[in-house]
Amino acid sequence: QKEVEQNSGPLSVPEGAIASLNCTYSDRGSQSFFWYRQYSGKSPELIMFIYSNGDKEDGRFTAQLNKASQYVSLLIRDSQPSDSATYLCAVKGGQAGTALIFGKGTTLSVSS
Amino acid sequence: GAVVSQHPSRVICKSGTSVKIECRSLDFQATTMFWYRQFPKQSLMLMATSNEGSKATYEQGVEKDKFLINHASLTLSTLTVTSAHPEDSSFYICSARPTGQRNNEQFFGPGTRLTVL
Image 1 (cartoon, rainbow over the protein chains, first blue to last red):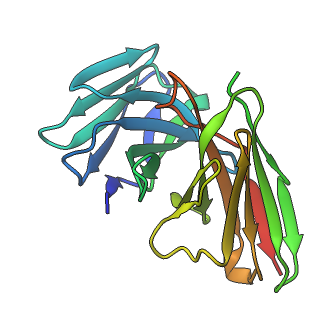
Image 2 (cartoon, rainbow over the protein chains, first blue to last red):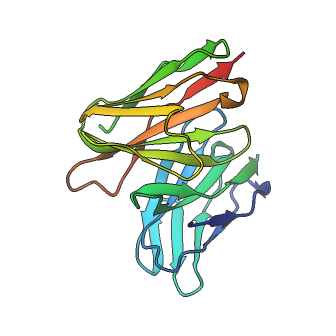
């Protein structure tokens, strides 16, 4: 059973700062990694996905993957109060191997 | 594009009744859909993978006879919670994976909040 671990937080950063969210996973064979954002009472929204070692940037967001350490992170630059949400890390998995296995999420609070 | 709808968005029912939740991909075809459940302040837990025209693949610990899944077309999957009890109260979320080149992505529905009295 694949497992995904995240620090539940809350992580508090001031507006304009860099927020760093971390995730580790148990299955060394995992290939696909996803970051989702979830506001309270809403369904998750995809921020970005990463397959290859290294960094992937999309606007204010950068995902970093280190397969040797089984570690994936998400950096949010110039954090805004609207970024306050729960951030979910996910890997491909499940009995059929095509679903997403989510971590418990890290709650981010950006103060103005 | 890539919109997924769920119906109903909220349902309250009495213990012992059955509830059907629909998940539709509105502007794409989805060979595969997924059903998740989320309890308050917890993460999404995968319940089952639903494949069009075949039986669903259930995760360990999920009762097949209690959570009936039907994926009769490329745009519709249904989850029926049979003989619902208060412990089944949760936020049920579906996602759909488009067929074709974008099939590494999944798009989530808005969720259905089930309350069993």
